[in-house]
Image (cartoon, rainbow, N blue to C red):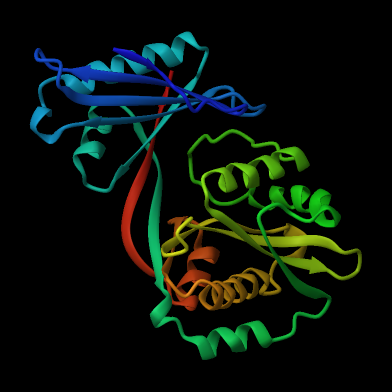
Amino acid sequence: MQLTDPHATAGTRRLVWLARDAETNPVGSAFLRLFDRNGQRHLAELEIRVHPAERRAGVGSRLLAAAVEAARADGRRCVLAAADGDSPGEHFLEAARFQRVLRLTYARLALADADLAALQVTVGRPRPGYRLVEWDGTVPDALAVSFAASRTAMDDMPMDDVDQGRVEWDVARVRAVAATVARRGDLLHTVAAIDERDGSVAGFTEVVVPGAREGDAQHYGTGVLPKHRRRGLARWMKADQILRLRDRHPRLTGLVTDTADSNTPMRTINDALGYVATHRSCEYQLNL
C-alpha cells in the first residue's frame, strides 16, 4: 500500500509504502526520498524496514521492487541506501545488487570526559588573520552571502564512490535550513572562522542541539575553504564550539558525528578532540 508523505518540502519529497500481512498488521515499510534540487534530480534515497519476525519471507524484496520501479519511473538514475556494518540490512542490499560505495565511522565525544584544559589551549592559540564568531539559528545578515559561499568547502570532502550530486547553496537555502531546524524545536549552533582581510567566512562548523537541550547533539558539517586550509581552523572552530555548548547547555551529554573512513584529516581532528568511535555503517548505491 502506497501512502502520502505529509512532510514534502521544496527540495525533497517522499514516496512511502506499507506492507501488511493477511490480518492487515503492518510488517514492513519503505521510504523513497526524491531530491528535487538542481544537481540532485537524478538521485533517490531508500530506507526499508521489515519486522524481524517477518524477514526472509519476501516482504523486503517486494518493498524494494516497488521503490526501485517508482524511482525509475520518476527518471532517477541512482538509488542510495545505508546499512550498519555486517547487519541484515547490509546483506539484503548486497543480495539486491547494490554496490558498497562508502564506509562511515560514527563517533561520540562524552562532554563529561572532554579535556577542557587541552580545548582551552587550542582555542587560545592565535590564528593570525582570523577570528571566531558564533550564532544560534539563522546566519546574521552581514555574513549571509559569504557563509552561503563557504558551503562549497564541503564539495571536495572525501566521499569515495558515492554519487551525492552537487548541492547548490545560496542565502535562501541557508536560511531555509535554519528555519527547518527551528520548526522542529531544535537549535542550530554555528561557529565560523572569519578572514580579517575582508570579513568573509573562511570556514564553519555546525551542531544541532535537541529541543530539550539534553542528551546528545548532532554535528551537521564542518568545512574550510581550500585557500584557508592547513592553518588549524577546523580544529580551532570545533574546540571553541565544544566549550561553548558545554557551558551553555549543561544537560547535554555528548556530541555525535559521522565521517567517511577515507576522510583522514577530519578523523584525525576528531580523535585529537576526544571523539571515540561507536559504530560503523556503509552507503550502498544502485545504478538504474
